[in-house]
Image (cartoon, rainbow, N blue to C red):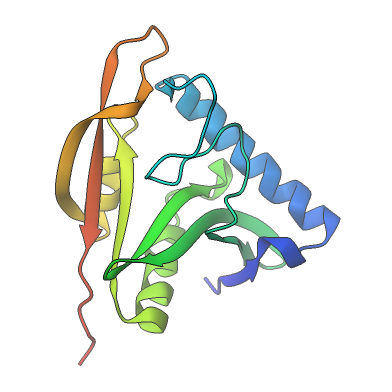
Length: 165
């Protein structure tokens, strides 16, 4: 699968619409599991903002396959790693290796470790473990709760950079 990354802000209206639909569908799924604990939706140290806004400190990227949008994510260099957030893959395109290929592209280009945060009960910790991430830190989330207000855990995960021979 030949994936192409394109900055979100240069997409035409059709592709922006496709990406926005992917983002909304993915985050609608997650809102059944966790919600923002802060009613103002203010940005946090994890770079999470209210609604589905795009944080100007992060590079927003669409992932295209055969001219159609299949995924979206944001990233930036942070400490000694490439920090990734808001990663979502179109429901119909999941389990096809898009995540693995995307991470390999980023690894080859940036030659650095990658880090991200995920929330318990989403299944994302297991997904990221399958593509080389390991648990770095766990904490009760200061930003999210379950929809009924109970505390929920967040996991910081790291994928070390391993140079190819």
